Image (cartoon, rainbow, N blue to C red; front, side):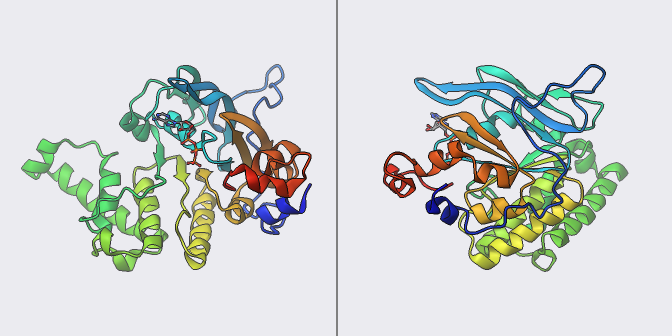
Length: 312
Ligand SMILES: Nc1ncnc2c1ncn2[C@@H]1O[C@H](COP(=O)(O)OP(=O)(O)OP(=O)(O)O)[C@@H](O)[C@H]1O
């Protein structure tokens, strides 16, 4: 391992701080023995996902599994296929091949490929985006209410007619939205419009809105992108608190400090393939990972800087 790799991971401790031992997402993990339940405590499993755009292959046989309650980080250089994977899990893209099984509860598996994004949200998969997608003119509270309303069952007619069921649902929605704003540290911003919030707070508001949909799996696409060190610390604390509630978190993040301090397991993508998977400590010393990031070759680790790959 080169000194350069140590710099990539910023001198982080090798161990996870997020209640390690929950499990790991390991492609090609040991097959269950007779009588063992293959799905026991899994929340999501992708098998052999292939996604192509014309001549570009974004995912090339990606398989990975995540256990319930785990923080699984997906890392990899630019263009490795991380967001494509999220898009396949959330129905934005339909892979040409492969399956995605999601367990909202351990006894109720659902196939996600072929479902529409809103149907997948209703099943319990929520996401945030690399670029913030709030409703800028709505207040923080209203933004979270939008998320909550995606799961509510009363129809527009009940709301227009002011039926008791609709009024009750609205009251419950406001209460839940305020709880979520409190969780993300934004209770005091409830009535401010989203566009007026500082960037780091907008990132946290997006997470509150995603939680409003009542997920059992939360996908965060580069939540720390563009945040300053203080905002990053707040965010790490928040993700830790969310995971401590038992939520399964799947995280794309380029900030290796955050990944290595938060993740229970890490999956590394490169050119649309999973090249490593394991604990943060394991992937940190995996030669294939070192090479993917730094292009370690005959010239040594620092030569990788010339590959032009960003350290993500
Ligand atoms: N809608 C699309 N049309 C064409 N090509 C696409 C599309 N979406 C993704 N790709 C291609 O798939 C590959 C993987 O892209 P993807 O965005 O998934 O990578 P990534 O790991 O998330 O990258 P980054 O870290 O830069 O966000 C890239 O070559 C990208 O150009």
